[in-house]
Length: 80
Image 1 (cartoon, rainbow, N blue to C red):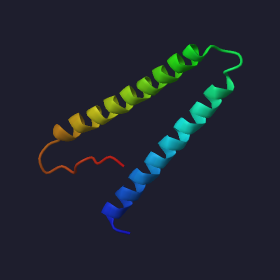
Image 2: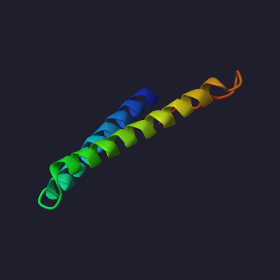
Image 3: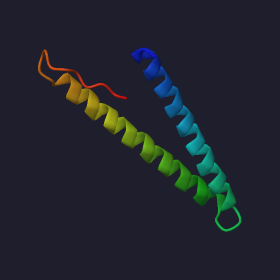
């Protein structure tokens, strides 16, 4: 398997894992409906989702900054 094909497969698997994780979180949040108000469930769920997105954005930004500041001729850092 060629490197571009590997990275595409890795990206697809990552997306599938994220979707499955989000579905599991929604399912567990729905099970709390009897004990907790819906607005509290939505607030907690949206807060966690936003925090995760912010964390991923920060990691990507740090990797890009690190790759931009490498010396010429040095091997580059790639995500994956």
